[in-house]
Length: 109
Image 1 (cartoon, rainbow, N blue to C red):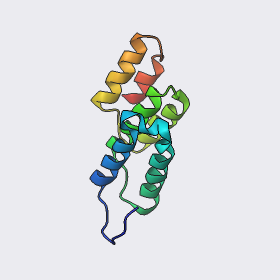
Image 2: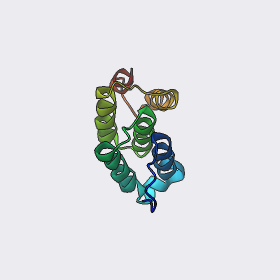
Image 3: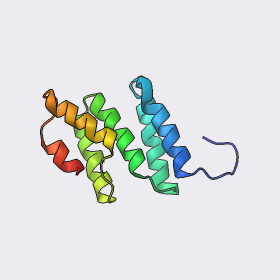
Image 4: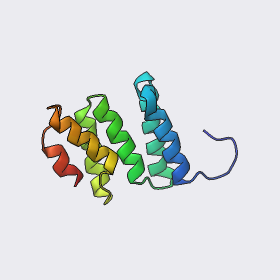
């Protein structure tokens, strides 16, 4: 990904992953690349933060991929992170219109 020996910070990784997931880019094949980057973070550092997980959770929820969202929520919670305002808002809206059940909101809190 990079040509220099400079280490990337968690902020840079979060920006790259968010960029891959915004505007539907993950629907165009970048979702797999975002996961490769998350795996690289797990192996080499820096350790992912709640922003990384929340971005990926929202992406999967928007795409209707509830199973992967549940896996990511569980992984995020095991790292002692919780859902951010954007993720909770999305889940609340999806609860309201019937696309999700209440268990999602319980998992995030």
